[in-house]
Image (tube, rainbow over all chains, first blue to last red; front, side):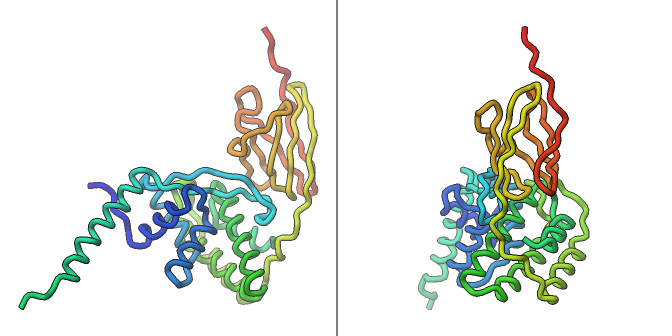
Length: 107
Length: 170
């Protein structure tokens, strides 16, 4: 059975996918907070990214250092083809549930 | 960045992902400090450090799994927060370049403080992915005729290394 996405993993993967390979810890966390409207712990983001990487839904690469980071490098995350497929599968599953939710009640 | 933050991360976070996580924490601190002031940024920083330490044992895909006293590290972060210890705003680190030579050739290393941010070998830039640094130990992957080239970074600036041999010619 293929790996499934957890609820928070799905949101982290959506944020990474939306950043088109240029997302790293800070920007992914900011996207999540902006879109969810609530604080998100950076530790939770790293843990989700780690699970996603183990499932093969994201890959990462190390990028350049900046002065703002005290000369430390960034690790960029990018959604893989299986990751994007898993997101589409989740959207389809949710749509099926919503059809049932929004269908008129039987008399 | 304060020595306290470095100490907590060195204790709790695997070296394989420490640099990127520390960089994210410093960047987040700097952004929040600009937006909401030092006090709020300080609180959030130590909350973030605690959250990273508590979850560190799960970070395995891009780090080697390593037994760590995660809860103790998180407690240390919370304690530091309670004591109001702040990392200094990331002061502009000292930027310098080391020009070096040994029998194998010439190379340059560009530093921000003790962190390497760039290098050249024989005048050609070295890809950042080939520069691996853990604290004061630097490795240029494949920098010694295909073998890893190990360099020690001095805390006060500068480097020491075992000179490489001259390349063999047919």
